[in-house]
Every structure is written in C-alpha cells, then in structure tokens.
Image (cartoon, rainbow, N blue to C red):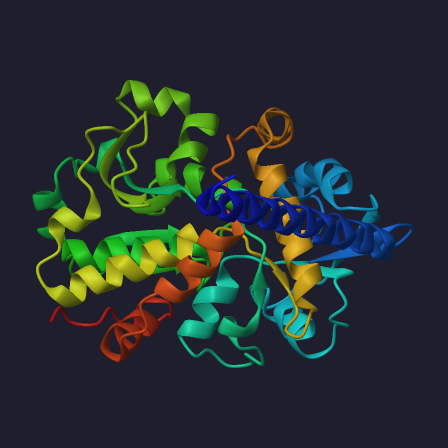
Amino acid sequence: MTRRETSFRSMARLLVIAATLHLSLLAAEVIAQASFFQGKTITIVQGRDPGGSGDLRVRALVPFLEKYIPGNPKIVMEFMPGGGSRKAANYLFRTAKPDGLTVGNLSGGMVSLAVLGESGILYDLDKFYYLGSPYSTYHAVLVSRKEAGLDTIEKLRATPGLKLGAQSVGFSTFLEARVFAYILGLKDTSFIAGYSGVELDPALLRGEIDLRSNGADTIVQRNKDWLKGGVVNFHAITETPKGEKHPAFPNLPEIETFAKSPLDRKIIAMQRAFRVTGTPFVLPPGTPKDRVQTLQDAFRKTYKDPEFAKHYQKLTSDEPSPLLPEDHEQAIRDVPRDREAVEVFKRLANAVALPPRR
C-alpha cells in the first residue's frame, strides 16, 4: 500500500468517526429535549380574546406542534387581550419564565407599536426569539360606493372632505385608509371610527362613509357580488409582500405607483413591513438556546407539513402563507426605522390631520 493510499484511508476513517460523533451528539440532543418536554405543558399566551380569526390560526397549529416538539407536550391557551397585544408582549418580555414552556402569539401591532415608540411599550422588539407566523401575505384594497360617482383616482383627489370609515383609531383598517389617503393625495379627508368590522360595509353602502379599506380576502369571502361590478369601485391595492398579486385584483394599481418621493416609498415599505410579520409567535428573552432551536424546528416542520395547510384552510377558510422562523427574524430586522418616516407614520396612525406630503 502506498503512502498516499494509507493517508487517504486514514482521512476516510477520521471522517467516518467525525460523522458518527456528530450524529451521536444530535441524537443525544433530541433525547435531551424530548426528556425536557415530555409530560410538560406549553402555554401559548395570545394577545387577544378567544374565538376570533387570530385564535383559530393558533389552534390550527396545535396538533402539529404537539406532534413535532420532542416529547409531545400538551399545549394550552391563555388569553391576555389589551393594547394591540401590548399587555401580552410586556408580560412575555418582563414576567414570563424563559424556560421554553411559555410561547407568545401576538398581533402585528406589537411590531408597529414598538417601532413607532407608542406609550406603554416595555419590551425590546429585537430581543424576542421568533418562531414564525402562519401567514405573511396581505392585500389592502381601497373601496368607494358606486353611487358616489367616485370612479377614478382623479375624482377622489378633486373631492375634498371625503369620509373614510374604520373600526377604531389605530386599527389596521384605520391605518390602511389613512396611508391610502396620504399617498393618493386626498384633500381634507375626515375619518369616522367606531364601527365593528361587519358594520363598515353597510355603512359604506348607506352613504354614511364614502371610502373604506378592507382586506382583499375578506372582500372575496363576504362580498363576492362586489366583484361583478355595479356596487362599489375598487381604486388601489397594497401588496404585501411587494409584487404578490391577488388573484381577484390582478390589475388594480398598486399603491407604490402613486408614490412621489423617497419618503412616500419609506411609508409604504413600513406599512408592508408591519403586515409581512403576520401574527408573531415569540419566546421570551433568556430562553435557553437549545430549547429555542427545538421549538423553531417544530414550528418549521409544522409550516412545511402539507397536512397543516389543509387543516389551516379548513379551520380558518384562508390559505396559509407561512413565515419561517429565520425569515421572521430577518423581517423584524428589516422593518424601516428611519426617524422621518417614523414621525410621519405616527401621525398617520393617530386621529390627527394628515401630514403634508414632502
């Protein structure tokens, strides 16, 4: 046997030994995590009331998480509504035990509240561990009633004092409507809040309000007759993520086509960023890294399971568009935090006059 052959065989043996050792360590880690989670109960703290669409999205994951988390722990819910998930996020950051047995599911508002520096925020957005979200796409559509005769953007701009309706100040439909009004250059627009979600469409058709923003999927599910024409006008759409066309509105002009400045584009990017983060699953800071990785892997396997997609659609009537843990962390890092854009966005998020275009 030549010296080269001997050296090659020695290297091959070393590689086999290294691979075997690596697999042994992985197996030991899986056993250790299974040993930790076995017989335990994981509590998912939801920053909302029970029974709504957000709750259903969480429940769609539960049987798969119980399957994929080593040791197959039981999963239960705790509800902590208040302040757009502010209360739950503060609890998870400051009070919850960081042992891997408390997971948060929060509204996308926990991201915007922190970036905009709203009051009562006691958490650092960048110190949570992220486990992804079951959805990350969203399309907001600006709608007016047909009888108002506002069938073009030019007519909207030429009509001062239009009334836009929404659920409440700071609610997603309120903010989306305000961003549409700002970017489209509408004049002296008034904003009427205080409706429930199901009250807004009748209010629009009765003429109490002239415009509203709504999700494209919601329009398709609740108001299919609107798609046939004759009832409302569709003016513009915000695609999240950018370039993600909605099948019911493939030719509707995207909001960025109306942007006139770099600041306009930053505002739109911020709006998209707040939506693309979905409803984040998070772990408290200080959770042991091995348990973080174990839970991230379980969520990753859940999102990629074809049976999960079927179960999710059956339970929520929506198709999932998962944001994986690693992509979720990147999405949080990518949220625009430019000072000028934040100041303008804060005005858009509150019940004050629209800021002037810059």
